[in-house]
Image (cartoon, rainbow, N blue to C red):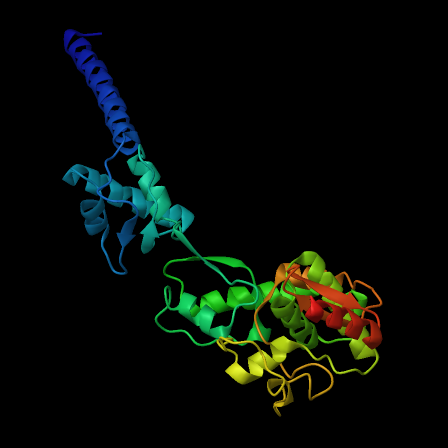
Length: 321
């Protein structure tokens, strides 16, 4: 090997070594850049529809460099090509000590900031509308029979129709799960929701609802009027439950399709939102021999009777005391 070849070979080795070191340092720097802790300006961060990645980084990260922005753009292009993913808009919760890679992975998925709405069992439509107005500007009143009262989670940028579909699917799946229950041979879904709503407004607790559910079944079987005060209250207040006085004997005589003192059978529709726990109690199909009950304010509980004679005796005894 000649001197010139030796020199050339030396320079090639040197160049190759320098190139390898450069490549190593380059990738090491990229690794460092994407994995070092970043300082978030505020949390949760907010990304608006149409924001560029430059705006997203500058608006939400302190001291982000032009070089970092360039590498992020390359990363996102590769990521969108391989995984078919893009960064989303909405609100995102970024934990402290997060890296740039953590940041990019989070915004490349749907918003991880969830809101929740709890529909309280026994609520009126006015109460739910007040709750919905906190989260949606464009919403409509949800009929009692359409949803089951429960806690529902949704992303901040979800629209009302998407939220409503979650509620509808929950109800559909719940009744599918209970489709083999023998109550379905006697009542349709709407009727079960009506009975559930009566329990919501009359029952004090789980045990009380079990007793009252059996009373309702017993009276329906015997073709007796249900004579449930909550239906009269619903009729008088048009579902607002804001009477602010005790029911009078004259109230029980108003001619209204929801008044179960006048009309036999179930009211036409539910009188409140029905919770999953109450429907679970309903599907237990509890049995007792009671046909009557009244509320004892001294004992703060309902008193049940098997006959009208027994009911009158207990009621008279309570009134004397």
